[in-house]
Each structure stands twice: as C-alpha cells, then as structure tokens.
Length: 79
Image (cartoon, rainbow, N blue to C red; front, side, top):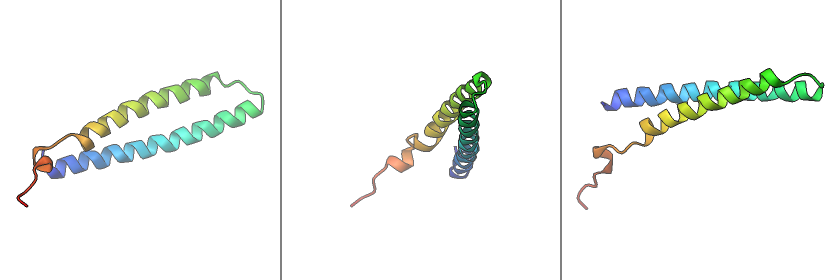
C-alpha cells in the first residue's frame, strides 16, 4: 500500500472513531438522564453495547492500518 493511500485510510478510520466516540458520549448522557428519571433503559443499553462493538471493530482496523510494520519504517540507516 502506498504511503498516501495508507495515510488516507488512517485518516478515515480516525474520523470514524471520532464520530463513534461522540455518539457514545451522547448515548451515555441519554442513558444517565433516563436512569435518573426512572425511565426504561433497555433500548439505550442495547445502543451502548452495539456502539461498543462497532468501536472495537473500528479500532482494530485502525491498529492494523496505523501500527502494522512496514519494511521501510523498520529499516535503520547507517550511523
């Protein structure tokens, strides 16, 4: 994979993680409000679990893209 396409993939994954984290925060706030008001939270719990699965999958993709060893990055030049 070229450097430019790898960089673009990493940027896309980071953007996806940011959006997902923001959605998780909103879900947590909604859950806290519903719990405090004594309202049902089952659907909110499902949403939280679903987003966490999505986050874990997306972060795994990010790790593979960002932290995979590339031959050029591991090469040490002459001293």
